[in-house]
Amino acid sequence: MTARLNVNIDHVATVRQARRAPEPSIVAAAMLCEQAGADGITIHLRGDRRHIQDNDLYALRQTVTTYLNVEMAANEEMMKVALDNLPDAVTLVPENPNEITTEGGLDARANLSIVRAAVHRLREGGIITSLFIDPDPQQIEVAHEIGAQQVELCTAEYAEATLGARAAHNEGAMRAAHELRRLREAATLAMQYGIRVAAGHGLTYRNVGAVASIEEITEFNIGHNIISRAIFTGLERAVLEMREAIRAGSKS
Ligand code: PXP
Image 1 (tube, rainbow, N blue to C red):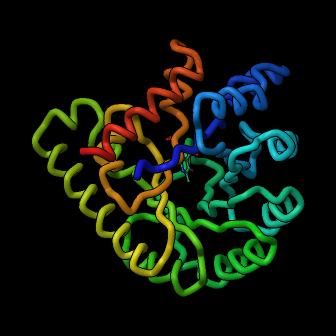
Image 2 (cartoon, helix red, strand yellow):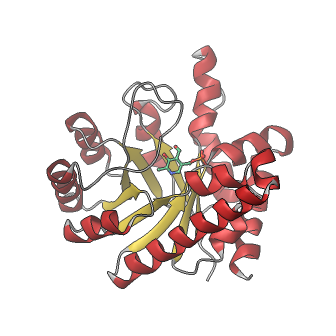
């Protein structure tokens, strides 16, 4: 079965925040993505509010009709926001104020008590809880132990290996194949524990296909590459083309 696609629309808000202007509208973006067949909308509410704002989450909760996934850090401020707004899902991510984007997965093992408490509270609130982790068997064991319903495997290392000049060299191809194997093994282990498997970070129209061929992965969260293409093609077409890239990969 073809995996679902949640479109991460953070960078629509990035353009808006560049001018602190009302446009482009995050709600209009979400509606266009849904019209184009996105299975859900993902946003990352960061501690520094560099793109998505609290009002955006509120507005999207009222308007998104498919599935709303909010990425956030596992701290008290964010727990309160999640439980006040009740998105369909929360993905717990690590957050460092100096990072350009999320750098790797959450170390659920090193932060066991914090992550366990967050998963418990979110689940009590009726929110599906996902952990954004590296494709590492030890992290999956922890996800199982603390009752996370889903893991999102970080594809950043794989994506990096497929980019630009590096990918043209044999070394890049070998690294990509190695990272793909790690993703596949992690996805299989998570499935064995009955944990749903998502994937995301750094995926593009060109590299998503190989990841989509991993049957255990049932959801993708993809943002930057779709919004980048949308500048030239419009959002609906950009979403349609990513859905098609996932569909084509899942058949290979
Ligand atoms: N998944 C998670 C957990 C993320 O933090 C991000 C980036 O916000 C994404 C997916 C989407 O990554 P990209 O914008 O590179 O597609």
